[in-house]
Length: 109
Image (tube, rainbow, N blue to C red):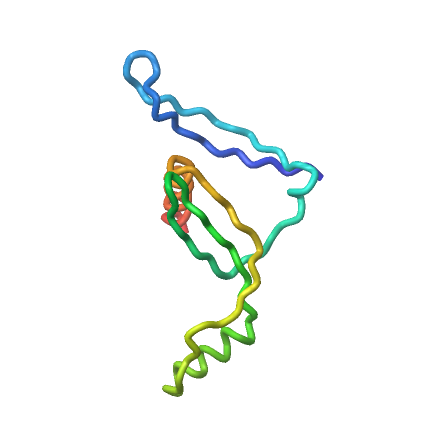
């Protein structure tokens, strides 16, 4: 099964006439990208010219336990364990485009 994902990209370099050019890119899954990853937690860090996004999975039982501790006023641990599903490193421009696309999608929801 080949799934395609179309994502518009805006080129910051000015096209002829001083206009910003937008091109649609059609991505096809590669050999190892067909398996979807599930994440219920994300962490973002900045680096020199890059943005690092770690997607992870926090066990639902752990989340339930944390919610129970907070509601009861008990001490919540400083750190809990999660399993990293995927790490994505993006250029600043790609991160900006991703944020823009996510904002557009979430405004519709």
